[in-house]
Image 1 (cartoon, rainbow, N blue to C red):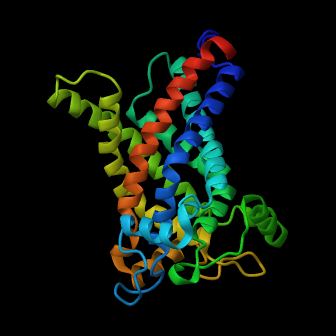
Image 2 (image 1 turned 90 degrees about the vertical axis):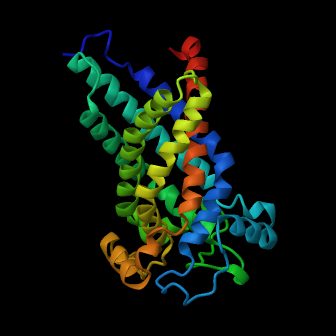
Length: 313
C-alpha cells in the first residue's frame, strides 16, 4: 500500500500539471514554424499518386521559404495561439498524468515501475493528453493549412482565429464536432509517448557508454533527445499524417468527414492512392520539431519545478 508520505498531494499534482503545460507552451513558440511547414507538406498531394500533382513545397526548407515569401513572417507562426494552448492543455495533461502514475505506482508497489509498467503509463498518459487537447489540435491544423491560392494544399477553412474557429465548429456541429478526428490523435500520441520513453533512456545509455568523457548534463540530454527523436519521428509520422488529414478535411451538415469516414478509411485510401511514401510526408519536419521541442520542454519544466519548490510546495 501507498504510505502517506509517498502519496502525491493534490497541490503537487496541480503544480506538475501547470509547470508541464507552461514548459510545452514555451517550447511551442520556437517550434511552431516547423509545425506549419510540416502540415503543408503532409497535406500536399492529398489522395493523389506521387508525380500527379504540382509540388508547391519541395522539402521542409523550401516550404519555409515559400511560406515566408507568400505570407510573410507571420505566416510561419500561423495557428500560434491554438498551438500554444494545445501544448499547454495536452502536455500539461500528459506530463501531469504520467508523473502522477509513476509517483503513485512507485509508492503503492514500494519500488520503481518496470519497463512494461512505464510503457503502460506513457501510453495511457499520451492517449489522455490527446483526448483532452483534441479540439485545439483540430483548430490548429485548420489554421496552419490555410494559405493563399498560389500554394494552397488540402481543404481551406475560412477561420479568422482560434476563438472564432471553436465557436464556428461548435455552432455547426456541437460538442461532437470539436472532437472530430480524435480517433487519429489518440494513437498518434500513444505511439509517440511509448517510443520516446523506451528509446530515450537507451540512447542516453549508449552515448554515456561509448563516450565516457561526456558527463551527465544538458549536452547529453540534447544528444539523447535528438537520437530518440529519430525513432519517434519514424514511428509516429504515419499517425501524424493521418491526424492532419482527418482534422483538416471538410465536414458535412451531419458533422461527418467528407473525405474519410474513419481512421481506417483514411489509412486505406492513403495506401491505395499515395503508397507508403504518403505516410512519410513531412518526416524531416516532424524530426526537426520533435527533438528541439522535447529539449526545450523538459529543460524548461525542470527549471519551473525548481522555481515552484519553495513557493507552492
